[in-house]
Length: 247
View 1: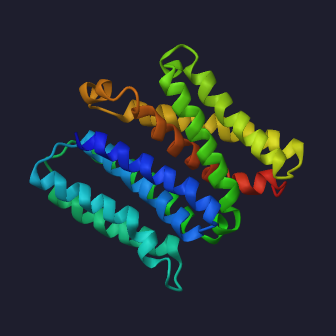
View 2: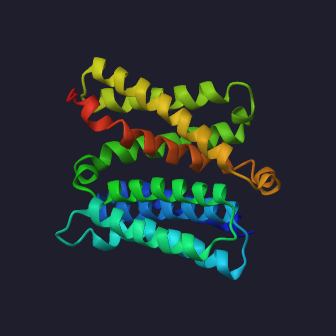
């Protein structure tokens, strides 16, 4: 039930991004994107863990780690270094008090938390502020296309990997060309980002353990895994520099 409620929260936050574009409200867009990532992070943590008291405390601890970039973004400090230090400190303490949790689960939790923290750090950075309209339009159009594909059950067919690749490729090419970027850099960016999007999306799907719950949410579960995978790919390949020819 909680996972379904998280989906509703993510959909409402996505709608708020759409409204914020017309209002030209950057703080609201940033807050909504951070909320979407935290909701995705919470859902994947719950999917990985049980719900006893100790593991609830573990879930909250990892969520706090992801939120650190927001807490320190208003201070004149190196966000990445401070986040890395606090992350290492908290992780060391958690490893000492959660000895009864399987090692591979800890590894999955750390990986998910790192990805979440990286994206939130990106959303509060100057790079995102300078390119928020470009990134936001890509995100919203992909959400729209992925939602249609989900309703048509295309994602469960043998064409799902082609859909994931060409969905990202098509959106990047169209939005980038209309934004005035050079066509050769647009195609390079689209190919690289789309390949990494497919990789991250597959990684998230393979990482899920609760298959019974997984089957109950087949109409929704893939959408935000794909969108988070796209955002990670966009960040890791430094798509803004590539599309501007700065490589």
